[in-house]
Length: 615
View 1 (cartoon, rainbow, N blue to C red):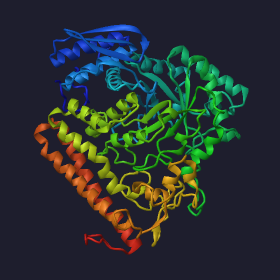
View 2: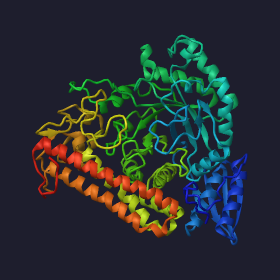
View 3: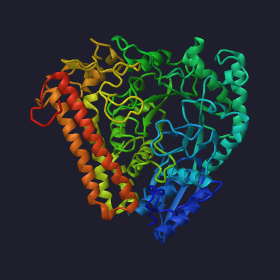
């Protein structure tokens, strides 16, 4: 197959290097099949039969090949599923296949100047020099990659909308948005645009009060103009009243009032409003021991259940904090039965190694989905890990997380090992088993050296890379662990902050008691002394020491394993990933030494195994 050492083909080595230009999904499916079968040197014939609209497809075997039935873009998904299976030497999935979630969204955090907030793979391939400016061939290859795993909606711009991005919906920019939408459409991908809640006050009005009739009329007019150009726009994405972003609170209004005003502008066009629930008082005084940041989303939104219009979707992060290595599920995901909700996951590795350290998200997604009441969730989104690096993700192996997200979003279930193996077989086939194993170990290794028992935010402020155990301890963000010489952690039980009471039973009871609380979340939910006995008899502080020593060794082992694969990996890929593993090993050693020394200095308790901890 046509492997490229620069990583640009990702898992699509069964296709030629440049995605074809097409105006319909049907036309594109036929061309991709023609090129793919030739690339794979397969003699099968594949008939593509349109049977209406829709995302589902069915593959059936014939004497000479296969038949794909489906609507648009369903037939395209079927084409990629067939080609991917054949490239792995497997039988294509037969029978009806349809997605669990109707919209499977990728949220980019790209800025108009070409930078990417929390981006670790180069610059934006959508924006440059304060304009929407892109290479159509690059966008087609990007869209092909997403469509091949069933992702069907993107928001190209940052949720933190700042000038000049607030003008993206204005007349001068809509034609550029339309050009982007036109390229994405044959791949079954729709646009979702991040907006600034206060936009009317910057474009003709002196207010953005959601109950002001002129504001509502401004949004209705602006939205109508956008839909004239892009009739299949999925809608808007909003971050409001959080981290200095404007919102309804500015005008003394509720979030339901603010969201409904925007939703009513979208309603005539069939658009949805995705409203992020990342809202908390981030100007907390560290002396305040009553306020507990993880409680904020539930306390704010759950009383408003039933007050949101039916085209408002509350987009909720998987955990109650901020994409830490280990968090419990957000209690808001279990609540609000009369409100539409979307699960927001993380691909960009802000707190998980920034695509320098290897962290495959598949096992994390599997754990989240397995314990989530999926009937309560209607949509799914993830924060992108993509940039203009030739290999898309900076770290070639980080592509596996994007692949796993697409497969998870389609299936409504995550089979982390299966998805890792599929990615490895189509991307690094000569080393697929070894790479699959490394991917599956990677998250646990990182967690061992970076996140002791559910404690988060031990990172360097601003960059969020590398250890700083008190970097955020006296800051304004409510991210405290309050370690002293005796104990560490926040008591979030019903005897403490009461956070556990936000969960339904049996989760509330499980988390409320340190004897039943999962150990990997122990210090998220409880404040405990350093000599607290763990289930295996070790003390809490000894468990921390052991994890950090073992995590650093695990990072060195990943490096050693990769070196053994040199003759099985394309040279460019091998060298790029080698440099990442070398940096990860050094990073893990730093985490080990800083965190172990921190706990030793706090507790005065040495390592029971006599290993070196710097005093």
